[in-house]
Image: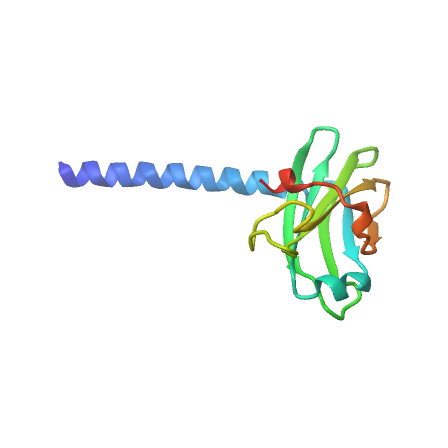
Length: 154
């Protein structure tokens, strides 16, 4: 009897786990819907001040405030683009979006792997216009245009 109980319990657990995993797979491709691709890049001007540093980017639906996707990479010291993120199928025509991104620079302090204040980690909020076609947006390094974005990465 104990063995049958264990087998039934194991089978039930397995079914629940399978159902949860299947649900997660169905929910995951929210970006890969029928929208347009977004490619977000930083030109070579990022290489000098930030080459070798980690960068994180979040695609944000500015109408709802929802973070749709987060990606990370390392800023290239000598590449052009210095970084590139692709968000497939993410933009719906007429939608309102932004890319929030920060570089883990830790200038004068801060913690590795943590989005610290702008005095330590450079960070920006860039509005993105969604159209009927794929969009490529290229940024240049401009520390004077920073905006606090750590909340998008919590």
